[in-house]
Amino acid sequence: MESLEIQGRPAIAGRAEGVALVCPESLTGWGGIDPATGEIKDLASGNRGQSIAGKILVIPGSRGSNGWSCYYSITRVSGAAPRALVVTRVDSSSAVAAVGLKVPAVVDFPADADPCRLIQNGDYVIVDGDTGRVTIRRGE
Amino acid sequence: MVKLTPREQAMLSGQDGPMKQRALENVVQYAEILGAESLCPVSRATVFCGRHSYLEAAGNLKYHEMFSRVQLGSDELLPPAEIERQCLAQTCVSPCETFEYQAFQQSHSVFVENREYLDEARKMGVVEVGTCAPYLNGWLPLPGEHFVTTESGMTILGNSLWAARCNSDGIEAAFWSALCGRTPRWGRHLTEGRRANIRVAVDFVPETMIEWDLLGRALGLRLPLHSQPAVTMDSSGADFNRLRQFLTALAVSSNCEICHIVGLTPEAPSLAAAFQGEDPAAYPEIRLSRADLAETYDAACDPGRGPVDLVSLGCPHYDIYQLQDVARLLDGRRIAPGVTLQVWTTLAVKALADYNGFTAAIEKAGGSLYTASCPVTIKSDYLASFRGAVFDSLKQITSARLNLRGAAYYATAAQAVDAACSGEWKEANRWKA
Image (tube, rainbow over all chains, first blue to last red; front, side, top):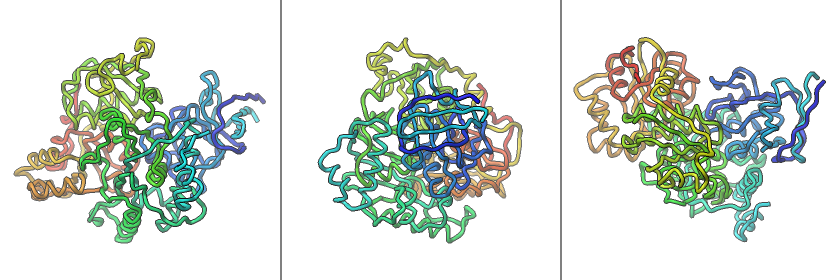
């Protein structure tokens, strides 16, 4: 088993762990996911058909419509929320989504520690929203 | 730590009631995540007030329960509060047309529930306007004015063309800001947050609406996230409608919130000015040619010929001159049997179209002029019923593809009207570089 730690900026406090879902091109706004199930509908996403529900969602930032964060915030009510949010570089839409989701979140990683490059789908990831530390375990 | 004024501290302590307290708590947490040091006053807001389809994921909630739980993130039902009086708030698009619902295969109960949501928003002080193009009705921020909006096209237009200040934020955050009158002083709200960080060279002169639309998407798909381009080009073919089409297509295909066009937009009298004194040569460059537009067109428009039963025009909502053009294009013609022709605008512009006879001309040909919504904002399964749909907007066709089962064609307004009258999409219509 390999293990790697990367350090970002803590955004939403708390600790969560689980299987990573990495969307290196982000997900498009307004309809990019099904907010009831968390299923990715974005036609341009390599993760189309997978669900963000219960995952550690790893994205570079937001993409597309101002109607971006609302599709994530509502998963807190629908039960399809990810367990944690990891954002390479926070922007206004992904910050609003973090407030709405209320799950542990870490943002703003250094250029040599881009979580979208270092984390792979299926990695086991521990997100510490108090310290900003993200632990990546592969082969577990 | 976000520095708050005495007025903000009082609101945060609950002096203005629990709903405004909650809204400001969210704005402060939002500011902390961004790393903002203070908040700035917001004087305009467009907000997303209808019973939009994504809200169904939260269950069948009445307006105030939905507002507290979904928009404010509160598990408690908060007593309603008014929008801050300093903030001119109006509704963005709605999932229902202002008056019609059967034409969109919607039930009466869906229409009534949406009406109830909009009525409650009115009680909070939001003016019901129902448009993605608030500037058509005079909602125009001044240079330097801080505003929030739920419309991506308005964000980038306001920043780029009017030098007003706005971040993309989100639908929830627009409500928070309208309620407490504040947003984080961060990003595009700061002068340094508006600096260009990538050069774009366009080696041709876009002249038609479709070329500006294609240029926006072609650029958006090539921009790294968080880009703020400074575009060098011959922009002599620009007019307001072409620019809003370009900027809207750019915004929704990237996360771009501001685009400087050297010699045209106010913060870019020169390339150096767009980079605020930094050396432009130190930043990367993207070059765009007509061949890039052709690639974008081919990705947007299905190949071959085929039957057409839906034609939708007006994304962003058409202005009065675009409606005049459609009326002229339809003069002496009839929509083919079985084809639905929809043209979308704002309620105020429709009143002008009624008065000028454009609505009557569209209806005489068998088309309809609608307000407050558009096909992709109406509940998603509506689009699945059509065999072939024609749109004159890359924003519309790209979102529509998520729910269409039939073919999708991308056209000029004139080609779209031809398709509505013939019931057919012809291969010869395809745009060529």
